[in-house]
Structure formats: C-alpha cells, structure tokens
Length: 225
Image (cartoon, rainbow, N blue to C red; front, side):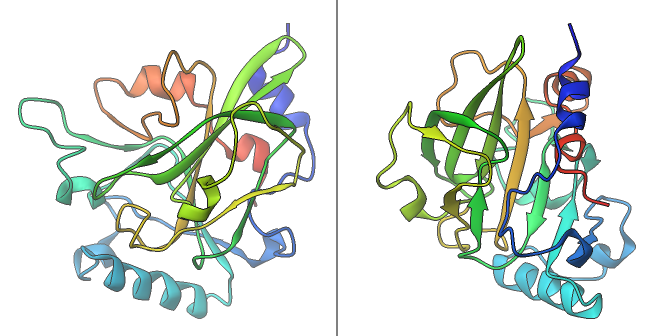
C-alpha cells in the first residue's frame, strides 16, 4: 500500500484559499523564535500583528504569506491554552498557516465530506473550525481548516459531501478567530480518535515525534514553491 504522503504528492492543482490567487503571489514567512525581527516588534495583539503581516505582504508584492510547519514559535506564550501550569509548553506548530485578509474564501483541498465542526473559543484557539474526512485508495484521513468566520459554521451539516476546490468557508477576523491576524490554519491528520471539530495544532517537544508522524507537512499536498 502506498504511503499517504506519496498519494498526496501525486495530487495536482490543490488550493485551500481563493483559487484566483496564483502561487506566484505567495511569500514564505518565518514566525519562529529565531526570527530577530519579531523580537524587535510588538505583535502580541491582533491589530499590531495584522499590521506586521500587511506590511510584509506589501514589501514583497505578495497576496499570501505562508509557513509554520514544524516551527517553534513564541507567539503562544500569551495564551494559557498552550501553557497550562504543570504541563510542557506547547510551542511547535504542526499545521501550515496562510496569512491573508478576513473574508477570503476557503476551499476544500480535495473531495470529502464534513466530519465535524466547532467554535473553539479562547485567545489563541482556532475559533470556528471545520474538519473534512477524505478517503483515497486504502487511506482515511482528515483536513482541518481553522480560524474561520462564524458564518462558515452557521448552516453546515456533518456528512455533507464537498468537492475539491469547492468553497466551504471564509476567513474570520480577530474578533472570532482566537485573536490573531486573519489567516487559515490548514492541517492534515491521519488519525483523529474521537475529537469533534478540534485537533491540536501546536504540540510540545515531548510529543513532537508523534504529531509530526500523524500530521504530515501540508505542503506535500499544496506544493507551494
């Protein structure tokens, strides 16, 4: 049986944001703890963070900033969701972030159906989230779309079929998306146990090996260059 990563790499023309935006207008973004620019900027609130993203896009004549898979970040220190007392700090990002304005259409990566959805409340959390289930060859796996608008989950139903490139949602703003600059958190998940509308998008060093194995690099599917 082929590895899931091999199958995903063979799928062409995949987008999860506005299909009219060519990948040539995407620019990589480093939000790791090694980025010296972040140490000199105040981006601990959504407004300042959004200004930083917008300026970065403008300077690079780009429409979308992307990156973050297996990236160690300091962004999560402001939230108790990632830093509960007595537990290991969760600061390793295990999805791919795509930064663009609120309201941008979000598309299904490939054919599937709605597995679950939820509004994951709290500073630093996903806000409105949709998870799709996919079945290809002998594999069952999932894609997660986080930081959506409230309208995105207002009238959807579990089990509804979706087609590749079909709009399933739109991006939310800071008032609903966990207090972030608007962006899509996109994640591939091999096994999801019994979770409903939620799955960790950030892990600790202790659990890094498990989560990287269960959540392969989304760019294997998207192929942003």
